[in-house]
Length: 286
Image 1: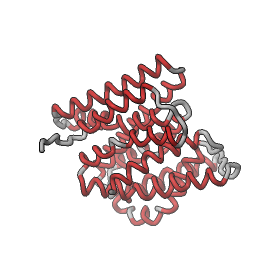
Image 2: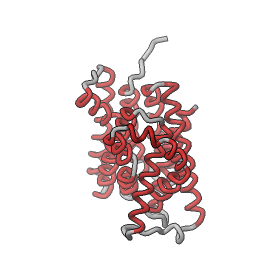
Image 3: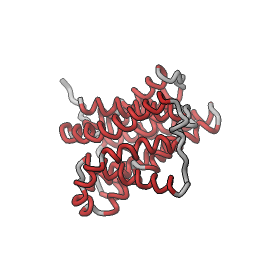
Image 4: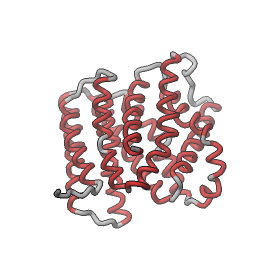
């Protein structure tokens, strides 16, 4: 149940980001809600976790901060302004196992099983199909968005590896991520690098983003994802997470009215099957 709650929230976050690019809220507005407001709520957790954070190697803390922080948020949001939410669901959540496995094999000498290799090949075929069809059948802005999504996926992979190696509790890591990112945003606002448009935006848009960015993504998934991994293991949780692109595609159709293009259908099949295989799920006979 925790894993299902997580993937529903992930898909809702992708849809909310796409809706945010079509509203009066800027990327900085969404980032302030995601990290600043959540950081204030998690500040007591952050203070309590300071001893653990001091003992954590700085490279892992940096990987968590920049892997899932403002750079990831910027790449995802910018990509949403070019490409539909279906591509975001496929390329961000569907391809980061490819980058994680690459890091595990190259840097940590993990063995690559035959099933996992076939899964990674399927993911690669799905990515290639999406990019090729996007370049051939759509304008240049579409495939630019897909490239932003791939960079965001790489950023999320860095976060995943850093979080695993850090040994931090999920809630402590979420507190560090949000408080540190909120501090960076505060400094940028004080020196005049960014401006906020929250006051000018309609209240219903702001409340919707607060619900998704703060309550759902910032707080609930900070617990549910870590709980699912502890109870089911990383492999089974990743397998359930493979359905996030499916929910994102359906949400883009029914909530945002975005048409499903041929590239999305092809990529959906290959990437979903690839993630299921690459996550290590055993194929058993009854």
